[in-house]
Length: 352
Ligand SMILES: Cc1cc2nc3c(=O)[nH]c(=O)nc-3n(C[C@H](O)[C@H](O)[C@H](O)COP(=O)(O)O)c2cc1C
Image: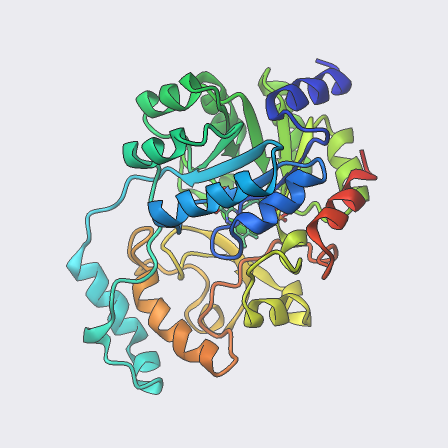
């Protein structure tokens, strides 16, 4: 497929004017950001990993009231782990000095903000809205759920972090593949392996996936401005998915400590860490990552690591500190602007 044909094929799938997707970003946005991007011709996204089904329905209703343009609804699709008491105890022991420092009774910590996978119940709620696009992170849900989503007419996108993952997604029903380079902020979509040495940068990953699959390829990771968009398209991408650049937009719900970190020199140093959830994700290096090292073999399986940290996070954020917060952020913050998301999308579109 030529680059132009690939772009047309992607626009047919998305139903948008622009091949620009606002990356779904759980924890820092709800429907307002999606509406702003969809309204100006891109594809806005609602991330659902941290929403209850009730909130998801409310946000979807708000999106539908805010725009009649296509939008994307995004889910994680991990298998929830069986809690392991021994590992949880070892993890809490490692964190004990921090609990003491903050006057937290470790035995009284409630279950933290979990991350739920796509379930039949989520599909029931989603079906009322029949969104144009549904995207998945960490592979795809079981085949019966993929078939259900397709039956009501949604197109399916999913993230690949290697050529093998892209081929797997194409073979298992993805209508387009998001090539997520190692620069990307937030969780790695990695799902066929847990070996981080397999992770490629966007410049290496995109052209290799373009060669390997027939479906359109969307480039993600480190794309921050119109030049980045142009570079991704030159590598054969049919479109782009941009996350970090939208984090300062007024429509995002990015916390005050996160916004401050993004605008500071600290944002130049990011790392992949499993401390906040149990799965590797890229964020700004903060106190916890420095002191424990960004990857710990003691962190409970995804998403269980989050509970113990959430208590510390709440205490520190109340003092204006991001020492224990997941400050998700990609390697390129140069495009982060306090601009309305529609304007930012139009600036990115200049690279098309
Ligand atoms: C704050 C933040 C939260 C994210 N949450 C999600 C999510 O809920 N679902 C998802 O599929 N991807 C998520 N991602 C990853 C994005 O889909 C995308 O791969 C990434 O933002 C692209 O790289 P960039 O941040 O350099 O633009 C998140 C990224 C960030 C920065």
